Image 1 (tube, rainbow, N blue to C red):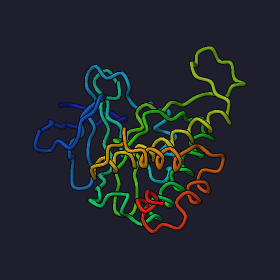
Image 2: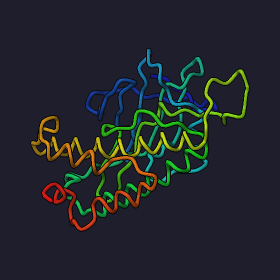
Image 3: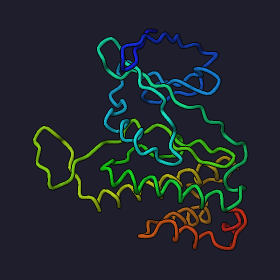
Length: 235
């Protein structure tokens, strides 16, 4: 398949099932080279990465977010693909990793979301499937649905989205708690817990990841005194 970089350089990539890594609603991901992978959007995909959002990410380089190396375009100059850094998952369940792993990564992603909020970025589609849990770092992938919004005091009729800065920050922080809650929920399910009927797990998830005005401090207090997160389930 033929793609083009921003400056018009031709890139050829033919998807091969032997190189397939993952697939989702918008496209499929394949190995590209030793340290990169490539996401190919489906032809009918309606949620392609916003170039304004991509430019902001390149500028601020938010911590714990995947690095997109280059956008690729089709013959109609529509974003059709992108090449990103490859990340490796750790086999250890987050519930059995040191509590500091959760706290450190939560804080780093919190800082990034705070910065993105300042830039007027609205966060969508943030859940466990868009997380790569590495040995030391959780990496947020797939920000294709994030949107650049304008401050509420601007009234340019050509722009669709407007935001109140503090409301946007609050909504984005809700996504942060929901993100970690979904990661933990999936992790409980991986070790055999029924998260829909187990009252102890449901209580743990709802209490640990309830919204708070000081997210890092709140999570630290909720996980205080346990070496690994699953210990909190029992007291």
